Amino acid sequence: MCLTSDEPLAYLITFHTYGSWLPGDASGSVDAAHNMYGDPLLPANSRREAAAQERLRHSAIKLDAAARRVVKAAVRDVSAHRGWEILALNVRTNHVHAVVCAAAVRPEKILNDFKTWATRGLRACGVFSEAIKPWSRHGSTRYLWTERAVENACRYVVEGQGAPLE
Image (tube, rainbow, N blue to C red):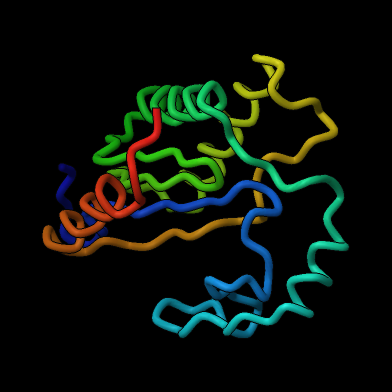
């Protein structure tokens, strides 16, 4: 694990597939005024979710087993290329979680590279055309400052996502 005094030990990077987590969703959501770490999620709101659904440019994206393998390989490839260490990775049907150690790199760079390389891989395999946007805007970039936080994030990524997928 990378260790420097003024930097976090790792980051928990999370991003969703397009249309899979809309404002007003029953599991809660964020907006421009409620998106700081520790802020409570906005409560479910069926009208807000329906309005967001109507604004979608195409159907919500779900990743099948083949697409999940492509995304996992892309995240591992870009990490190896950049010299980042993947401590935990879980690619689900509608989101990706990764705990990554990347000294002197902003987590937004990591998030953007993961999404870019995954998109490129999915398009190269013919999973999505250029017209399809596979990812939602931005994602979550949590700083992990302690070994315990890293351990908890890794456990969450590996064990806290439901049954393993093929």
